[in-house]
Length: 92
Image 1 (cartoon, rainbow, N blue to C red):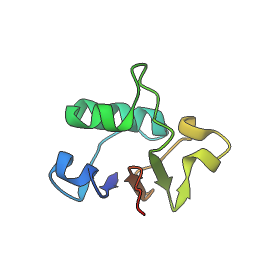
Image 2 (image 1 turned 135 degrees about the vertical axis):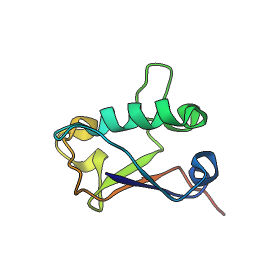
Image 3 (image 1 turned 120 degrees about the vertical axis):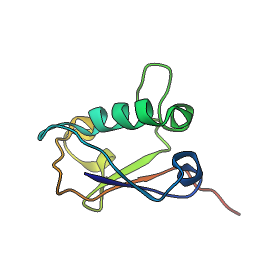
C-alpha cells in the first residue's frame, strides 16, 4: 500500500510516498509499527513510549481521520486504501 507523508515527516522518510507491504486486513496500528520499524527517526514523531499513536498525529484512511473511525487505530486497511500521515502543524 502507498503511504504519503507530509510536512516535517517527509524529510525523515526521504520522500513523499513509500510503499509498505502488509497482509490484507492489517490494521492502522500494524501499519504504524511497520513504518516506525522501517524509518526509526519517525518513532518519536509518531508514537509514545508504549507505541501508541500521539494524539497530535493524524492518519487518514481514504480521507477520513482514524480518530473518527469506529475502530480507531484498530481499523483494518487494504492495499487499495489511500493513507496519509500528518504531524501536528501550528501557526500563528
